[in-house]
Length: 251
Ligand code: IPE
Ligand code: IPE
Ligand code: MG
Image 1 (cartoon, rainbow, N blue to C red):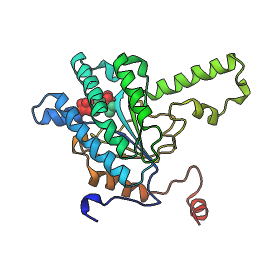
Image 2 (image 1 turned 90 degrees about the vertical axis):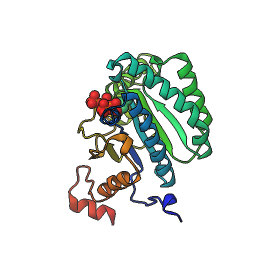
Image 3 (image 1 turned 180 degrees about the vertical axis):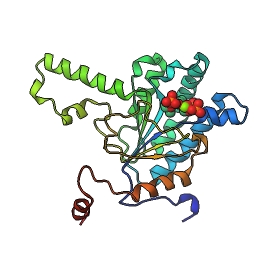
Image 4 (image 1 turned 90 degrees about the horizontal axis):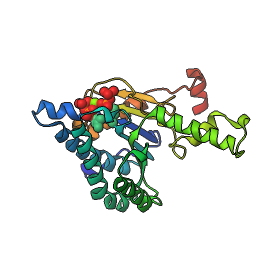
């Protein structure tokens, strides 16, 4: 096996890795380039990480590409990001499909142009029966938006008599989130040095292990991902139990 094709296939691996890909702008600015060049370099890093996760039998990789707050950026940057999103979707979907990767876009898609919404629908449809890695791209996503849209749907379902108020439970709420069909993230990574959630998967990250790296996203690579996974594997997840209980459960 060549070094290129080696990957982390291991039963202790995180099933679901969620990443805030931060630092594109600073990566470009450090090189006296316009911020958009950092986003282009960021797409290259995405390709490599997706490839690596697919080879490593990771079940789900969720990438935060555009937050519901990113509309606050200068109009030019927002427009260029939308163009890049559309172009990337177009150029990558066949490759994803060939590699048995299922693509899922989460977020408030109604804010996107009709053309982009159509491209998203087509790409999801083309890859929906793939059984390898599920690649989740969070675009115009916000954790608060996700919880809000779930509440709206639950209230509507109660009003129409479809469900009863007493049926509201954590499991039910989970079913109305846009991540309903996915396992909860095991490992959360944020590049770019900031240590915050920035409104990513708020509900879903309740028991996720956090890992922060100073590396700017375009510099994020297989080695850095491996370091994060090694750190993840060195931790004891207790979910409220004692350490001793967890050792007994593992046996
Ligand atoms: C993350 O990189 C990508 C998006 C938010 C679209 P940034 O653009 O936030 O990069 P920095 O934080 O300014 O360096
Ligand atoms: C979070 O990064 C969103 C994405 C990476 C898409 P930001 O750069 O927008 O986060 P803040 O504004 O620094 O919290
Ligand atoms: Mg940023």
